Image (cartoon, rainbow, N blue to C red; front, side):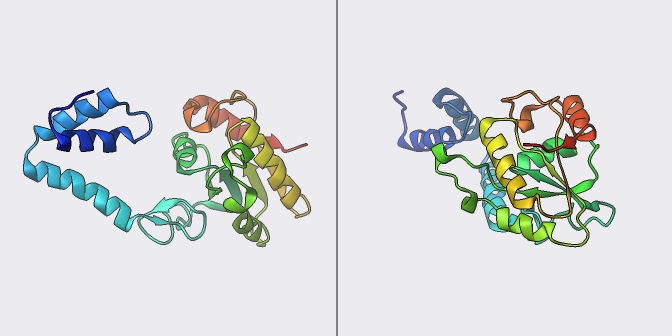
Amino acid sequence: MNLPSKYIERAVEQLSSLPGIGKRTALRLVLNLLNRSEGEIDQFAQAFIDLKAHTKTCIVCGNISDHSCCSICSNDKRDRSTICVVEDIRDILAIESTSTYKGVYHVLGGVISPMDGVAPSDLSVVQLIDRAQTVDVHEIIFALSPTMEGDTTNYYLYKKLKDFDIVITTLSRGVSVGTELQYADEVTLSRSILQRQPFTI
């Protein structure tokens, strides 16, 4: 694609580096931005500068937050005896959209995937074990996507947690095998949470 300006080309390169955005979509977005006022562009750019500068990771669960403790962990109405283990923030958003789950979360930061070079040490497993050893925790829900990597991670976590006096459950298989959790519809996901079952190997 021959572009008439090196500045347009650089902007297209940056936007097309985002997941799901190809060169043509990036060019369309760049041309739209080019037609905006300087003030609008400054506001647009500042939003991303602020995003990087001020977004924090919750010290309790690993969720994304504006503060050191996220709005879920700091909410006294949440059930702290139940921890739902998820891969990343997108899964929290998916589960929260169902308005079904009232417990708290633990973000692993990924799943075990030797092919991608992701080992257990790359995830927040130690932090989960530390939380599991507190007196208040009664149940841990494995809410990882039902993929090979998700099942491998579930098995690893189960081996680490099985000797604790904690109920370990997993989502019912209303979520199809191979489906990324974040793409499951709200009704299916809600039923999977409500009908969760004991985790077995």
